[in-house]
Image 1 (cartoon, rainbow, N blue to C red):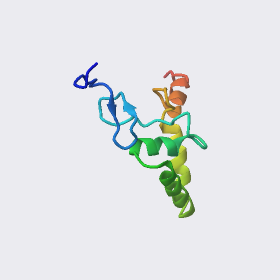
Image 2 (image 1 turned 180 degrees about the vertical axis):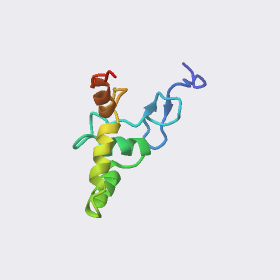
Image 3 (image 1 turned 120 degrees about the horizontal axis):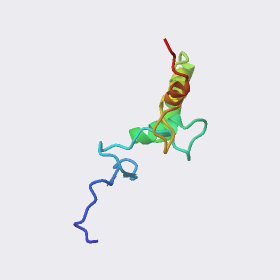
Image 4 (image 1 turned 135 degrees about the vertical axis):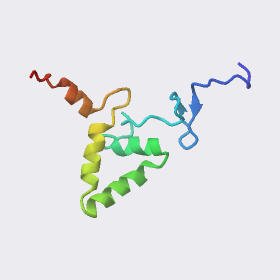
Length: 103
């Protein structure tokens, strides 16, 4: 392969240097398996935004201490952001597992 051959499907993310396989130009929002402390919400958000994970964690701690908004935001992220390698979030899996109501 020479230097003029490019793969339009795989591009490199400028902030993280990781390969992307999405057509939108951004890495998908997902909770990674590696680099997580609790559920991976801060690590996934940091990867998506292209910032250091410590910045996101500090913001969540400050929001928690300044009124408690960090806890519901983290829980919402845990329920709504899918795991790495999964197409569905925990919330969508829970809703699909509920039996269909008959009227």
